[in-house]
Length: 448
Image: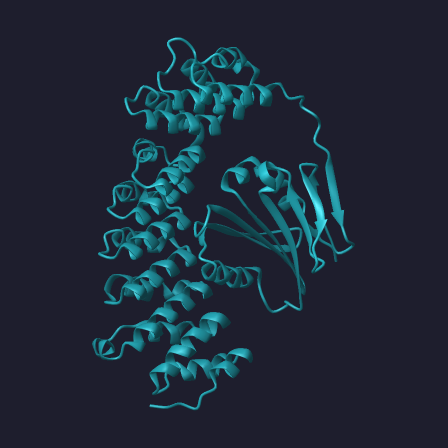
């Protein structure tokens, strides 16, 4: 079957009626391209036709291309975000034989963000395909309904590390104390990414995780003790501080790695009450511990100079930044801020787009997420809100293709002008720069 429908033209013209008609074309490839185009156009007028195109029929199995029609339809419904699609997306996630369709349906339910999907997504944590389970866990974290917490806790024991990783991320977003014991166990997971995400989740839970972390300092597994020390350093409460001091006091922990990590954590907290045990650690038998104690003491004793707040203002936009960052110019006239951290490992590019009156901040964010996928990056968190008459959308992602990299993109839209800040750098440096990044994002303003 051949079709003369020009999908590319219909997409450029945002001809929703024409694309909806093409969604029912006799040529299956035309249907697929129409669904893909409607995904990009993202118009609510296409919701009901997309719901119909999403519905699986047994004869579809004879035409492989129709799975792509359903897959793109599910993704389009997620991008449009209309709650009318929820029942059909649930049906697809539960009953479609194609794993990619089930995955996209699970993703779309997370994008819509309605608690009505929670029970179905919980059931999808048992899907026989790991990618569907992973996506269901991620969507549950986005929706944030604590009903899902016990099931995400179970998902931390999934056979696939991707599922465990996203379960940890979701539990960190929910900050539910019930997750603390199993997140502690996950600090010893066989996969490094799961261990890292479990640490971050415990750090987000914060003070309420401290008693369990202190108890973990008595664990026979030195790796568990070392991870617990790191998290306590990130939380930095009074109880965390005194627990870390005790680790370096007599009788000290017998593992040099734990002692070194404890010294590092005390340096991160920066409280002078840790100086005595750190000075004792400067005489440790192992160089690693001595070096970490030296660095920690330098951090604590370093004069607390007042941070200067600088301002960038080009007459169109303004933002504040601390003197930890420097402004440089690039060959294409973009202004770039470079964070003066270890190895200058964070950069910020300031990007300008005009004539975007018909594009919402969320729609632009969807385009950026496509760039993420092309680059091999994963979206870990996102949120949209409004401030000072600007539509704002934040996307946080990670890339592990070559070296671990954190990415934060924040778009600001006002009338026909859109700017986005693109932060890229080492995950550890990102944590160090958290307050500076928050300053820049909070102060960004478009005039007019």
